[in-house]
Image (cartoon, rainbow, N blue to C red; front, top):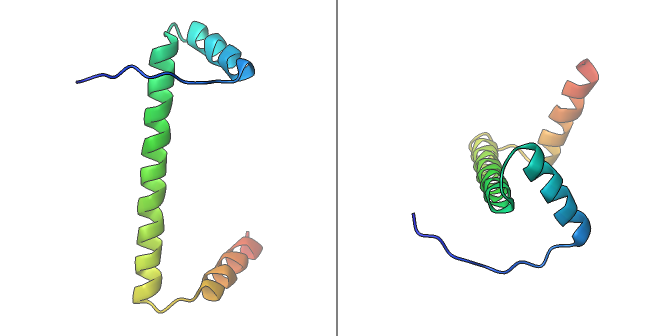
Length: 79
């Protein structure tokens, strides 16, 4: 895998947290930041897929946004 070196500006407070977690997990800053970015990207992609799926189902069933909100509220009341 090809790699690139980049420069980042990070608040000192966040950098301290990164260092503490990296030390606790026996990782380097680079490893921790890389794995964190991968998790972030994966979560964003999964969320985007979920939104697209929801839009597809809503479109196929002619659901409006109001219908979905009503359904959510009804579900929450039943709990």
